Image: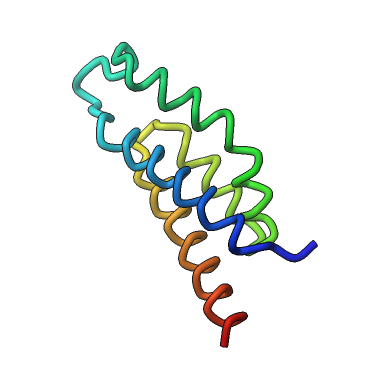
Length: 100
């Protein structure tokens, strides 16, 4: 099924904002897991991850796996930020291409 970029882009933009915020509070030297913002962000991320992974799978095989791995948080969340940024870029290019 083709992706509707007009619907997918806002979803992925919001998800990127959440993942970026999660990465910003990650600190291996502290107990960031006790931060109330962490729980709130994880709840929001968990609520939209399946939709974002579906979009990612449609754009590029394996990209959803990179997002999932990046959300493990073992070494921060920069891997997830990178993968979601890549997804957003692909969606924006596809939208631009479709408009031209």
